[in-house]
Length: 133
Image 1: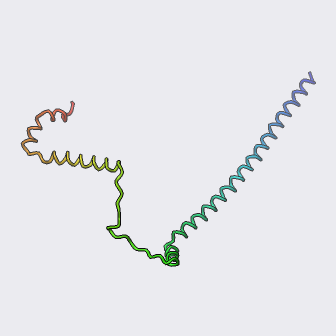
Image 2 (image 1 turned 90 degrees about the vertical axis):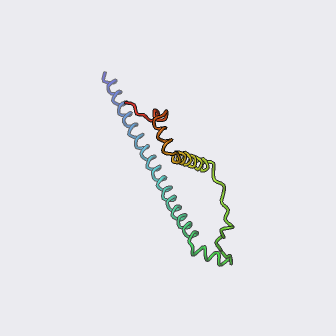
């Protein structure tokens, strides 16, 4: 009986020890992973800052002006005759068509005479607009 209790207590102690060591190993792995990701983040932030500086420097009007002057390039605004407008997209055309159709329908309603509108009020169209009680 004593041997089984002693063996059981040793097995429990070994299991607890193995669990503790496993947790410590996982903590070390996690800390290495965090350090690696922090280093990558710092590198990316530095790279982003350098890229932002380069973009701002390259787009600076004074730098562009100096570069054009160095290459003896004259910049002139285009005349109205030189500007070519592209064809509108089908979506824009559809929207414009829907707006014009709506305008035509509204204009047709507005062009009706008073007498036609009065008789139409009592006709079939009035039944469609009647509210149910």
